[in-house]
Image (tube, rainbow, N blue to C red; front, side, top):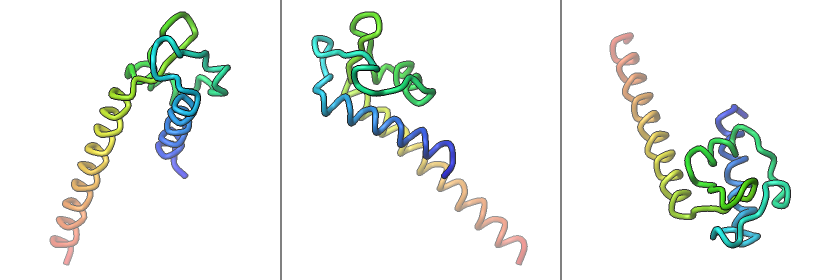
Length: 97
């Protein structure tokens, strides 16, 4: 499995934990330790992207709208890269035949 897939899996697991614990408002914020989430690169990226928001020092909550936008951007980027790959492959096959 490549690094990108691992990051996506870690992010989705973290979001599931926030949802399971009901941490979707500033009042319901918990620490990453309480949620059993380690602050790896994947989680730091969610914090930087404001998907996970800090309610008080060390306590975070999930902004569901930001998560949906984050996932939508990731899907668009993935589909765009896939499309470019198909075009490049077709171009190479066409001119090498």
